[in-house]
Amino acid sequence: MPKLHTVRQGECLASIAQAYGFFLDTLWQHPSNARLRQERRDPYVLRPGDQVTIPDLRPRQVSCRTGATHRFKLRGVPEKLRLRLLSEGEPRRHVPYVLVVDGCRELHGETDADGWVEQWIPPNAQEGELRLGEDEVYPLRLARLLPVEDDEGLKARLGNLGHLHGDDADALHAAIADFQRQHGLPSTGEADDTTRARVREIHGS
Image (cartoon, rainbow, N blue to C red):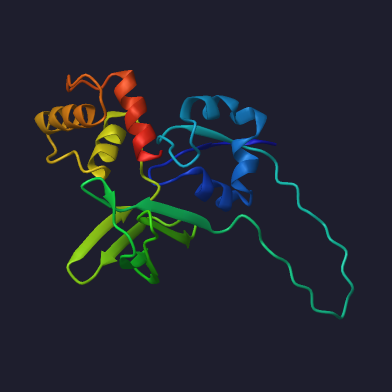
């Protein structure tokens, strides 16, 4: 029978789906998860304590000839990591990088013409490190972004966008005001619904 999975810190729907043997879309579109879809809107941004309905797994049976070798392709794995590098609002184009995933897997590439980094990573990856040359290193905390309605989720996005410089209430107020000025909103320094929605839009999640 279906069960409820309580989301823990560091989990997203991709990692949960992999753990239970499902595709992400199967869980996300399941009728019992309609409320979760309405509240979160993004399967990669869940809050610890959220509950995901896990339906019964229905094994697929395939008839194969004995005495022969057969190849099966697992769909839906891995997941794509996408992040954009900007400098003063302009994309950092064609920058060589090394992406280290969970301290053991190195992926080499170059940002595209719009400054995007795109790499396939395991759905359950937790940590990463983006290296640009020898002196520029950015730690990545994967699958830990809280919803923008949560103040910690708002702070994380403002930090990713380069507005947050500090960890106290004054720094957050200044970051919100700076973001509002840059994007044509009243510069109140208060995180109203309009500001949070705009932060989510600009951040991309």
